[in-house]
Image (cartoon, rainbow, N blue to C red; front, side, top):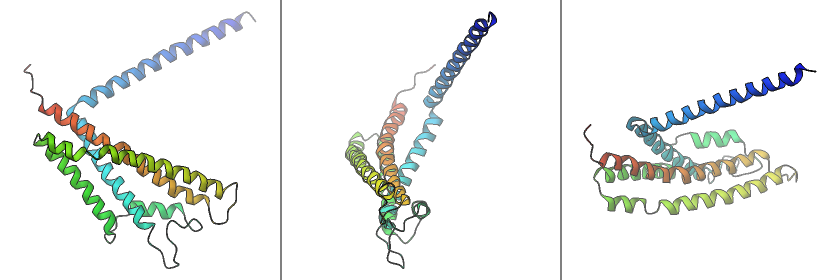
Length: 212
């Protein structure tokens, strides 16, 4: 009985020291990440990955939109709730098709916009950059709103497929709505971030270097 409070106090002290070490480690990780983020090679890699992600999201969105209008031999499309499976969705958005013109043109359009944005920054043409980035906020807002609306519908479909036991819907159908939400919200985040990263990266290059 005498040693029990002492043992509890010692354990609390050990936990307190462990928490302090963990906090110090997390601070060191954040500081290291901040230093790396300010280095030009890392920022270039991040910018390149963001542009690639944006092009992939655009292609996936238009591929999914195209697939929802294409029927199989049984006359059913990917949007048919009674026969939909998540594997069908995964194959649809991750497979490159040379026959579907809509996703191909959307992908080329996204790549062309990104190339034009980089060239405009390299040419120091603020007017062209402003023209290219003018519709970004509108597109991001539309993507956010569309994703929210589709997510609400997806929750309704989930209710129909589970506790309402509707024969025309299954749980796999919900993954289609989830894919739309992820893609649209991904575009809403990545598109403005590409513009921000381009401004920061090329503005840093434009600043005169101070001799050491």
